[in-house]
Every structure is written in structure tokens, then in C-alpha cells.
Length: 368
Ligand code: GLY
Ligand code: MN
Ligand code: MN
Image (cartoon, rainbow, N blue to C red; front, side, top):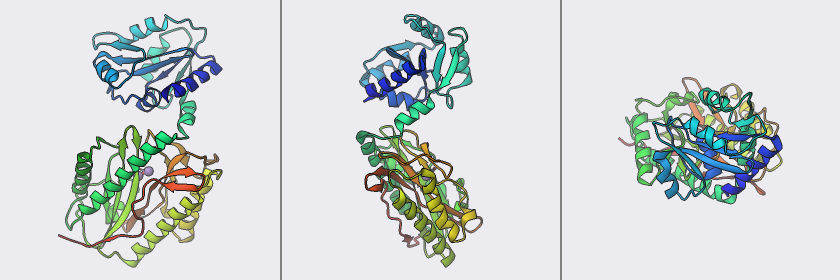
């Protein structure tokens, strides 16, 4: 699989008449090699040339990389060596007639671009992020199966969170319980910082969990996801702890209607921006348009946020095999915040949710 992906990048290198691509984001290194690396500040870089490629890694990672089954060329360096000297001499082994170097413009550091710039006179840097992202946009069956397994753990994470609710428990205590239980299930990494927010705290889309204690009659918002075999999940559910008031229930129903409307409209060929507008119209017509301040969602895969952006500005069309979130919300300051988020794959039959935790409003009986 990775060979085919590398081949596509090499075709692009040929088309651009570029010297090489310098790939350092852990997401694209994983996509192109199958290796999940966490280099901290040390350089891990995949150099891809038209007819060649090699992975530059710290010597201390060599054994792990080989144990993971990677059998292609490695250029290794120790902490006392200058990796850029090694890179220069390795590059000199192949001829080059181009001054174009492909980089990941969004993530490569300026420091590394300066080092690349010293490799030859008058280099020209070109962004290869769009070509990488367009490869990653459509998921394979194997990727979809992994995303489905990651989504199942997100569903379970919400369940762990609900089981941890009791009067007086704090948001951070619930988060600790969710992550503890998931770790016991073998999950090493969350796909972003787990969020649990109570009542009016959830009225900010990116509220910060803290020592707020849970009270009867308020909403609890869970937003969490895991990384499984390199792929992410991302779910949001909002539940009532005890009976919430009629205004809160009405807000919940509007968000659920908006979420379902977008889900049912998620067919191959639809303009992505129109999907955002489908949900936004439901919320606006209910009078809450000013309280839905973010896009409908985002692409999901190796990155928890990747292409396509599910924003009203996006004029691209949904295609079979794309995966993304649908996550409308209503946030009324000092009153309540409700968001409902599913991970979705586009199939011939329309959008199919990967996350399946129930969405009808759950009322959790209070306990102490
Ligand atoms: N957890 C952040 C998001 O839903 O995009
Ligand atoms: Mn989320
Ligand atoms: Mn999300």
C-alpha cells in the first residue's frame, strides 16, 4: 500500500521536475512508510526522489523501525553527528538537474528550510501538502476498517464518561476516568485533549474543563476521540444529568435535527458547503443562527482535523470514501451548550456514521 502511495508522490516529483520531496510530518511519514514515529525535536525525514527514497532517522530508532518491518533504506545519525552533513553526502550520490524541492509548507519549520537551502544554490521551495492531502482524501477499505475501530472506541469512551457521572464529580475527574478506562482497553493516545463540560461551561465551543462540580439538571458535553493504528476518531455527545428545563431540551432537539439533516444530505456529489448550509438553515430557522459559530465539521483520518473542511465556503463535492465529522452546535452564553458529532463515511447509499452512540436525548438519573 505504502509503495503505491510513494509511487504517486514520485509521479508528482517527475511532473514537477523536482529534485526531491522532504517529508517530515509524522502523519505523512506514516502515510508513506507505515511507520508511526515520534521523533520529538530530532529529525525524522523521508527523502523522496523520482527513482529513489530513504528515511533519515536517529540511530536510536533504528531497531524499532526494523522491528516494525521497515526494510527500505535508512540513513541514521547519532546525537553527536551533524545530520545535515550526512544528508548532503547521501543526496550527492544521485544526480540532480533541478532546483525545486517539495516541502510541507504548513508544518515544516523555518529552521529546517534554512538547512535545506544550504544544500545547493538557489533552491526553490514548492508546497506538496495539497498533493499529499488529495491522496489522503479518499480512504481505502483498510483505512475505513481502522477508522471504524477507532470510532467504536470513541463510542465506548462516551459510555465510560456517562458511567462516571455523579453529583459533585468534577469535569477533570470524569476525563481522568474516561482515559483510565480507555488505557485499560489498550488505547495509548487520545486524538486530542478530552473535553468534558458541565452546564453553562459547555456554552463555549472550546471550553476548558476544570474543577466545576456536576449539579442536577444540567447538560454534560463529552468531546473525545482515540488514535488507533494511526487513525483518529472524534465524537461529541451531550446528555442531561437529571431533568433539564424545556429551553435546554428545545435547544437539544434543534441540534439533533440539524445533525440528522446534514447526515441525510451527505450523498456523493453534493457540494460540501451546501451540507454546512443544510444544518445551518435548521439552526437559523429555529432562531439560534447566531449561536452556531463554527463550520459543520472537518475531514478525519490520520489527522483528527484534515481535508475536506466542511465549511460553507467549500465548493468541492463529496466523494465516495471521504471521511469527515458532522458536528453542529448551539452555544448560548451562560445558559447551555449542545453539540452532537459523528464521524461519517460517504458511501453509495449516502453518509454512514462510524460513531453510533445513541443521539436521542439521554437523561442520566442523578446519584451521589
Ligand atoms: N474535538 C474538536 C473537534 O470536534 O473538532
Ligand atoms: Mn470533537
Ligand atoms: Mn470534530
